[in-house]
Length: 352
Image (cartoon, rainbow, N blue to C red):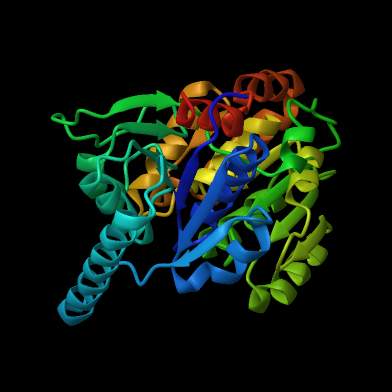
């Protein structure tokens, strides 16, 4: 089992940062290490519910600096600065052996404090393009761990070692890893927690124009759009289940022969873990999503298409071609699959 250590996990901001952090925290605790998890107020309950039973929780005063208002930006920087000073003082008396940060502005104060006290620091980047907070913190980091094999935007002068680890996903995705296609003509449309208007506008029309009318659709959308989409599918005699929230996403992905969706890091890694052909439409204001989608397309698992080119005509032609050639869907599924051992890889890297 090796030497037991005090390990500080820094996370916060959104569930996309928090869940991978908690997965690793629990694995490191299982290996006998003493865990502290720091986060900001937005995710305190999520962290408390998912952290190891004996982990210590520390609140960090922080928020993102992406606001348009200069006053809000300055206030956010002030909070991060105060938290950084507080953690520098805290580490004077209770110094961890390792610090593992999972991105977002809430992790920056801990990374800076670890740098001051020369604590070995590990930073995880979710996306295929490095985020602003991580790019800023990278100057103080020993090792950068990545979800994708290639990460765009790394500073040329960085001295950090780069290790490809993958991104942790929930156990239900691991249990369904590399599941074969069922070939039941099922399409899953998901636009994330808030749905995606572009998918609601384009996908139903495209499916209604397909040559193959025996298609079953599961479509996740915003609550206010559920009734309208249900009516459209019914009028066009398309079997569809329209939902505002999908509770069991791993089963929904396994049941699908094709997924149409956005390309957030967790979505793309979940598709790779199970191995599903996909059409990914990156959020057009988000370079991270564009990089994630491009990485998935490079595997051969699907298509990355910009919103301005994502038209009903293009999608109908693409869907007709794919569902007329089931063997092509099988080949795409095999290329999409990437074995996910991210929790073990990250934990091993931290404990080296």
